[in-house]
Amino acid sequence: MRFLLDADVPRSSTRVFRRLRHEVQDVRDISLGDATDQEIAKYAKQNNLILVTRDIEFANILRYPMGSHVGIVVLRLPFDFTSEQINSVLNDFIKSVKIEELVNNITIIELGKYRIRRFSV
Image (cartoon, rainbow, N blue to C red; front, side):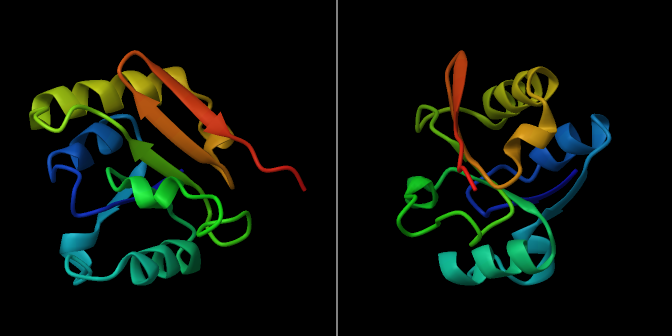
């Protein structure tokens, strides 16, 4: 699967995805580090990428309904979490989830759990 990391996710998180054999891009590496949420969502959809972000606005199903994205993963972790802690949570999550479940859905990751807002056709 292919992922796009938002600017609020540590750069080092790319290594977590690559180690688990997923393609990943970082918005800061493709001149989207200062882009609006809409520009990032549009880029992710056009390039068939699941967006990974800490921006809770992306969890709003009214702003990002089915069909407006390939999939969104929102990290709802403590604000003071270090890169290592975030990467540990991401690593555990990616290992435990069936990646195809992320497609076309919004997934919220919290400490020790996650929930998937599934969109029906």
